[in-house]
Every structure is written in structure tokens, then in C-alpha cells.
Image (cartoon, rainbow, N blue to C red; front, side, top):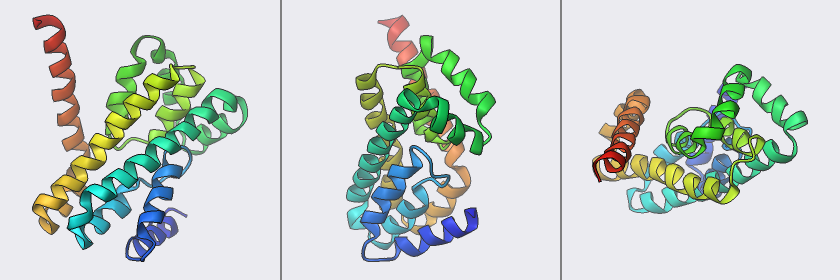
Length: 193
């Protein structure tokens, strides 16, 4: 199933309707779909680097709106659909830990996890199930998902094809370093100023 979905996304990235497909892939990835939109974003930006920022914006919009669906699943349908989605991906143990941590660290969880390549659906459903503040969730999703997709699009815009292999092989490392710097910056601001 994963191979077929991946192949479909690669074919869709080359199609005239690719921006529409990118939006919908980003939308469903935030609540139920297993493959991140980067699989479409990367070849689309490489094919037309002048539209890198537009593609990142489309991806961000789809992801944030899909995140609202994920939030609604967690908030309204956790006992049925939400648990099913979490179980399908084998994330039950992680989910309960996330949900418990939201009381103290909700904003940080969204900011950090939303930027990394971990399943964003886990964050969105957990946010709804934990009844995390909806507007803070939206703002954090815009920042974190927009930052992630702009980073990918920007690297591809400036460096082109050679950066593709680097991104695909080291995306987790790159986002981890960014998150460490981001968190370190906030800690420094909190304790130094």
C-alpha cells in the first residue's frame, strides 16, 4: 500500500494539477495519510524553482487546514475514529504519552513535533483529544509547518538538485538541529533577558 501511494504521489508531482494534489496530500497527511507532502514538494520545486515559495505556501495551507481536521478528530471523535487512526499507525503508546504531556508542554510539543518529519497526525489528534487551545494550536501549526516547508523549498530554490539527496538523507538531522537552536534561543531569551 505504501509503495502504491508513494508512486501515485510521484506521478502526481509531474502533472498539471500538481499544486492541487500537493494541497490535498498535505491536507490528509495532517490527519490520516501516511506519506509526508515533501515527497511531492521536492520534485515540484526542482521542476520549477521559481514557484518554490508558492508550493511551500500551498503545502502549509493544506497541512494547517488538515491539522484542523486532525484536531477535530481528536476533539470530537477520539473514542472512535481518533483511536483507530492512532492504532493503524502503531502509535498508541506514544499517543498516550503525548496526551499526558500536553497539560504542561502543549505549545512546545506542537512547535517541535510539527517541524520534524514525525507523523503530524499524532500531534493534531493529540491536540484535539487534550482540548489544547484551538487558536494557539492554529498559530503554532502555521509557524511550525510553514517553517518546515519553507526550509525545504528554500534549500531546493537556492541549491537545486544537489540538495535533494542531502535533504532526503538528512531531513531528520536538519530539523533536529533547527529545533535545538530554536529551543535554545527561547531558553536563552527566558533566562538572559
